[in-house]
Image (tube, rainbow, N blue to C red; front, side, top):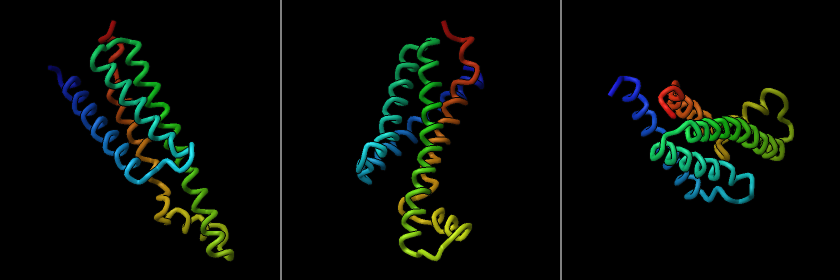
Length: 141
């Protein structure tokens, strides 16, 4: 096994453990109140399916599926940060109508429910997954 293959295995393990743990946490937190909250769970399911396909039958098609899934994680993570911050801004405005500008944003970002930057973990998964797929195309049929 080459160094690159070993690193890929480690990245794959980290990614699968992270996705599984995050999916379980979202389910335990009942992150299913509305359809928009299903996005990370669906993305995690699709990502795990694409990774499973690629591990069992590596091909250019399965590699592309993994890369597309990682792109979805990137978009979902950034959108999730937006939605979490927006919800926090609305709550902070109701809680203290005098807050404005930077003070309002600071309070929204520091809010614990929902944690404003928690969806960033999906961005992290995207980067790990894209690193996992790095230079694999030439190894596949």
